[in-house]
Image (cartoon, rainbow, N blue to C red; front, top):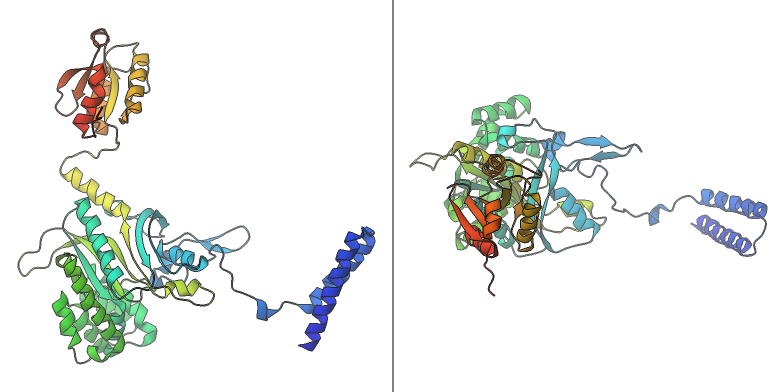
Length: 469
């Protein structure tokens, strides 16, 4: 230490000498010679490892190790400088990194952005390699299950308002799963890989899952059977209470904590009036490694459940859970920020909506335009431009075809294809009479409206607030 202190003093003195020479405007040769001496002393000194700090910067492979077996779906890239980089797999890990970098301990936010998966696309099922997710998260130290219940309430509100059909939200807890694996005889090193197998139960049979666990992952058949006794159970708060009395599971500290929180969660969900949409499902595992507590996944139901029958699911459209340890993985001091959130699969929902409209032989409206300004004869472009400008200034969503002399039939067909409800038609006779012919695209009814009354009539028909003068 004394030797290092002496070197540090020499570096300091030499640095002062170089600065003094520069101030005195000494010769370049002399300054260069003294700078060389300074650099030599610094090289002897070397870095002070005790003063090195972990600095968070733009992510270089921060995604790895967060997604378990799903990590194989991450797009790994390498930039020209040789640094390892990845396209973001979800919005949760970047959010946790943001909290750590900015030392935030309390925030509620939503985020809509693209994510990327190196997956096998299935367009008809809304499964893509590049797609949008909508995330909602609550970060901070709060009393148990209150933020979690709010996230589930938001999820149910979104899916109900979209009117995409009946849905069910499956709920479980990673602590219950880990406790269950422990009492069934699964070694700690196999928890996550067995968890990934269990998570496939919504797509394949128990026998197939068991074969994977035993044949591919080396689990003993009797251990797999014990797991099967648990993961094939589902229900409501009564199942939570039943498992709290389970002689083995209730003796596991982790499982007991998870079951206690789930019981509290169901109380809050009942108060929110959504408990009928929630199912405690022990097969739900959510393969991502960062989940630490409550987990959930929303699936659409093809048909209502008949008495004694299980509803038939048609796929997951939203998911989420609690991830209390993720922020600490990015914080230099390991400070934890409890977090819970949900993610909505935007393209998945769009795909379902489009399929249902197609089945009902309804067209998907591709524009918000309320009225098309059209002409019945040639050489009326100037009049169309004047009218569309008037409508824009009045706050009406209007457009016109970008042609000087479009045929009226083509203009009407465009409205039908795009789902535009109204057409404001200008003709030579209409100009003389001071009126505009307003046509309903669906009923094909036409009425003459005085030009000064056109804005109010369009607003009345499209449900916009009328001007009170």
